[in-house]
Length: 440
Image (cartoon, rainbow, N blue to C red):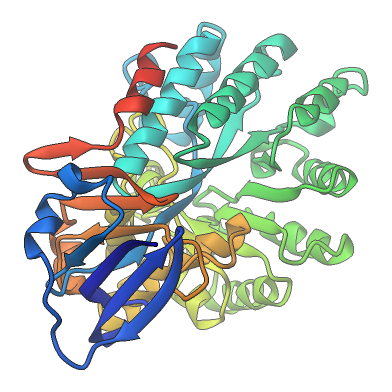
């Protein structure tokens, strides 16, 4: 039986010159076919999906509107989201944000952490995101019990969200080189909980090289991917990415290492940055740019021409580095703005990386869909026959309108149903999961 059929739909990541008919059966794309002429359907259904979403025989006339694969947010901090009122940041610097959050962490209950994760994930879902990789603060500098409790909160939220959103949980194991062997026993327990990857920010450690070596050894020992915060600094002399490259080669971790931020890369000389980017491509190290938080945090000490802290996105695209863009922090001391909307993040990426041609904007769309899917491990995530149907419908007919208006109307489809949708008059699909948050 047909789940849904879309006619006159625009698929910019498939082909920008035509409209398509898309047929979904049993949650799988069974037909994606270019149209030679406009086909007629029920055009009213686009604005009434909310009232017909249980129908198994929908034919929706999209009238040229855009369909994209659902978004994948490959770098977030759901455990910190919406903590700004509790944890201010008067200077707006990364160092104060880290210090203030760490000082307040002991006062955050397990229930509060879980609610933040749920709230952030549901907000992301409403904007079209169905897969999220979240980095989790591991506060063992305060107590091992607290660190494990906060990690458990995120993992419990992951289970509650499973029917709607897939979470990958990556604890940030910082300052490993400063821990005694007995102190590091807590890592075994944390990993036993079922985490997805190993994370950290070794460039902030006084023993950055040793920390990176231990993080790689940990990832190899437990067969986990490695996703690191790397060189979130304005100083071009901070270049821990080189050790990441060397260790990726040494440990044969090609395709399993992701480097987020890479701010200092922009401050380096053209010659040096070019060599590093080429080596990243050779070692299959993925990169993630975080334009919201980095524009807010970086360049605070600059005078005159202020650096914006964004990594070399254009150069990475040219050298075929797998580069995604992601939300990072939302309404917390690291970034007081944002809303877990990857289309908004895509717009910021286009601004900061000077990407504006149609071809470049298509690359930006891939940076929030197909590219992070590869990093996430969902290589078949896309609009192709035989793939699982997970997509977002937008009230826009071309990509310039899509970015200019950020399409307030969006409908999200996954697991054979409309799981979220927002229109000016209706908002559906989150009743059940909203109750999960209320009952925590």
